Length: 323
Image (cartoon, rainbow, N blue to C red; front, side, top):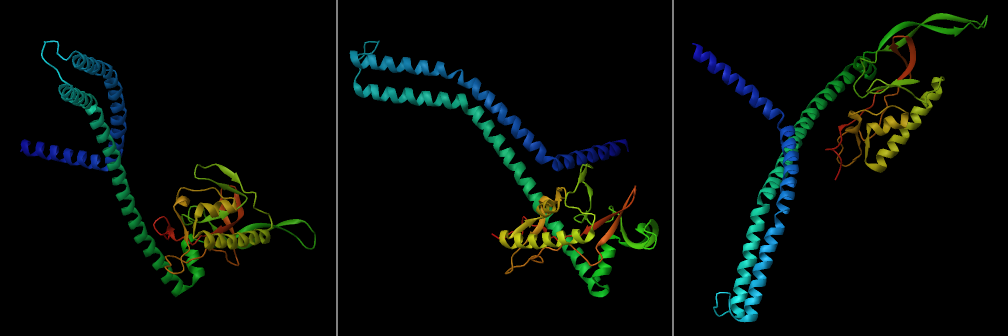
C-alpha cells in the first residue's frame, strides 16, 4: 500500500514538474540560449590564446620545408625536391586546419546550440500567440453575434445600456434659479455609469483621466461646455475615419492619442482595418456617440460629467492587415 502511495506521489510530482517545464519552456530556452552564447564567446576567447602556438608550429614547419628545398636535402640527408615540398606543405596546412577546427569546435557547437535554443523559444511563443489569437477571434465573434441579436430584438440603446451597465438615476445638480439668480440644488435624472462596468476598450472623455498605472492625467481637450466636447469628438471621429481610409489600418492607441487619453497595452494590438473588398470589420471608426451622450461616471468624490466612448474596434488587427 505504501509502495502504491509512493508511486502515486512520485507520478504526481513528475507530472507537475513536466507541466511547469513545458509551460515555462520559452523562458528556459531563451535563458539557456543567452547563457550558451556568452559561454561560447568565452570559450572562443580562450581558444584564441592557443592559436599563436599553432601558428608558430606551422611557421616553423614551413620554414623547414623551404630550407630543405633550397638545400635539396632534408636534415636527415635525404634528397628533397620541389614536388616533395608541395606535398609536405599541403599536409602541414591541412594539419593546421584540423588543429584550428578542433580548437574552435566546442565554441562553434555551443554557439549553434544556443542559437537553436533561442529560435526554438521564439517558435513556441509564436505558436502560442497564434493559438491565443484564434481563441480571441472565436470569443470576439461570439460576443459580436450575441450583441447583434440583442440589437435586432431590443434595439441599439438597450444593447448600449446592458453592455456598459448604464443606469438612469436621479442625481443632485447645481443650477441657477432663473428668478433669483442664485445657485440651487435640484434632482435630475441622468445616465450613471461606473468605470468598472464599461467594456475593456471603452473610455470616459473627461477632464481628468487615469492611465493603467493609476496616474491621474489632465485632458486638455476637455471643455466645461458639453456641446464643445461633442463637436470636438465628432471632428476627431471624422479625422480617424480619414486616417483609416488612407493608412488602411488604425490602432486604438492612435485614436486615444487624438483624444488626449492615455495609451493601453491592448491599444497596441486592437484597432480597425479598412478593406472594402474583403471586409473583416465595419470598415469605419465609430466612437459610440449618442444624442444623450452626456453621462456621469461614479467617482468617490461625487458625480462628475464625462462622455462615454465605446469604440467599435475590429479586434486584433495584426493578423487582419491586408498584404
